[in-house]
Image (tube, rainbow, N blue to C red):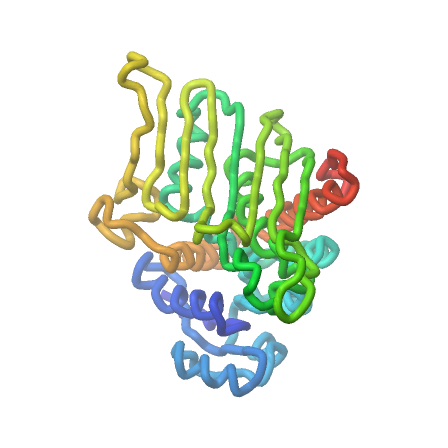
Length: 367
């Protein structure tokens, strides 16, 4: 086992999740590289000191520049706002340090492309934090599709729906300003990533993006609340993607449904340990969706628990992600999703916004 010093930039929601994951991943997966929480940086030295004490880091940095430059920090995790991603990643790559960056890759396609260029020039491990697609259930679905379990796929529907902004009387906060903080910057990248992972490249989109509650206590909302996207995949399959932060009643509606000539698949993150599989075989009277509970027979489940149906949770997805990042560093081989895969999501987002503005179909390659 070899120790690797981890520096995490950001100590909030995702900073904590990555700190916990790096602390646990060695024990869960018996990794060859064993992370040590070397340094944390935050919005101020005082915040960094608090996170150091809470999460067990060895040191707190004055700022992200100090963290990236520190020789004891071997790899960098970026869990800060999107507009900070590019300079941090470029600084780390310039020093030959691997980077795991939270999604979305950047606050613009231009910055995402620059980050891909820097990552590939450095030739070191780079990953984007799309964690939901890493559940044992969704990994199993990817296997089913690769095996042709439902025949030729004919249609895909994906969504990411939550209701944290559903109340029109909720005050406008930071989420209500800036394109990257809106639904298309925050939620939409997840179902787009799922669509790309399950179905392959998206060729073109026709989209409608809308602000549901334009005025809130405290000011005007300047970004979007939800979006509906018709899409055509490069394979020829048609699809639909919906994302919303105003979907009343939905808490973690990361869901998808896939139809094929020989069956269908359904999944919903609010029931993340189950996959619904329909096989078009046998007498019609006895056909129906079968609920498959994940267990040790499914990808990346057994390291957490040996009991079928006991389930994995949100934090476990981040631990799986940490394992993949360490594996990429150890082997020198890219592990999906790389920065280039993150760029593919950004390009679809840009095409969606362009389509909504022009009211026309937009080829993704055009952006």
